[in-house]
Length: 318
Ligand code: GLU
Image (cartoon, rainbow, N blue to C red):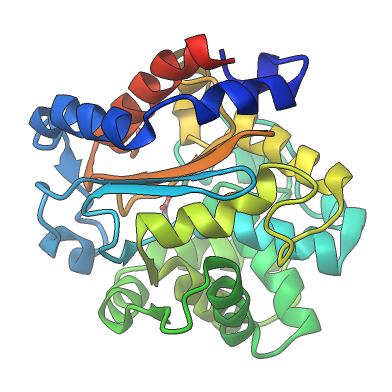
């Protein structure tokens, strides 16, 4: 059982320390590798299509220290929508609860780039973890800090303890060239009065943070802030806000498969079309998995299965 259902997270953590984590991750890798070619690597951003579907990496950071990495867990990949959860955290820090005046916090039940609800709901995106919501959050941050993309990178370098962390320029240029749907979204938001900056500026920053290249180890480290009050102090220190970010991840983090993911894995998480999924077990660990081939909803096939195996295996360790 994960810590979300654990009445005493410390007891769960003590049990976790008795698990041979290296062995567990190695077994999971062996089990899911055959799934790596089950889905399709994202191709609507052409630069993503060049990534081999045979990649698989996984990294876990345990509360209080301890880090375990398997497979291609140290190879940088395009974080894409995983960036949206960090952007939300930064917006809650910088802007606070006022951000909810511009974006909702309900699951959309639609694909991440759908415009249907946006029109029906008058330009207020359902949540910050789908494209329209993330563009609004980026716009709000950009209004505070004109070089927001660089600031984002700086914060991520600190949180991931990765001074060399950079944007993937090829992915950035590719998405910018093929980003007409996001362009339509940004202009629609502008028309409805929910975009402050010029759509090109908001999208420029949005494409940038989506193009950050990070490894599983780096993302798991950056996600430590969601484990609990004394973890990952670089981001969003308020326990109250951290808990709320987890709530949004639980309900909205896996596109229109959030319900199925909650059933199979049961952890707050955020996926991206680069094939990464970052999940957290509050009080216990953060974990990142990467496998580029996606299912029809845009989630990593082998990645989601790896997380399901992990939580099943740790059920007894709570
Ligand atoms: N940059 C991607 C887009 O805007 C992010 C999509 C995703 O990872 O969900 O389409």
